[in-house]
Image (cartoon, rainbow, N blue to C red; front, top):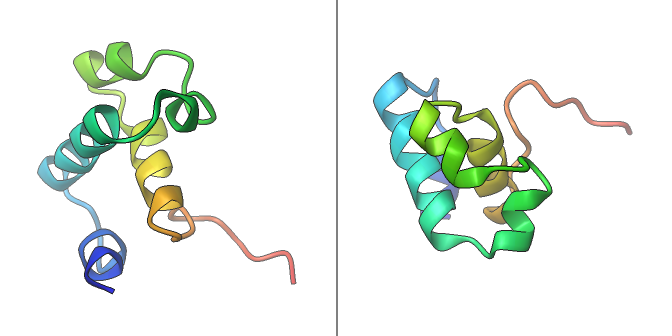
Length: 71
């Protein structure tokens, strides 16, 4: 899908991580964000993007980078 290409293709540079984090913070339901971070907007403001990026990847049906399959 287009989302998979945008979010899953290649390494994420700092700017892309920031944009994906913003997309998550402003677009995902708060409950979905709380599964990844207790303070989504605080994380965005402080530049802590890992939880927000993980939430967006989960929403897109993609495994976070570094995740392994338990098959």
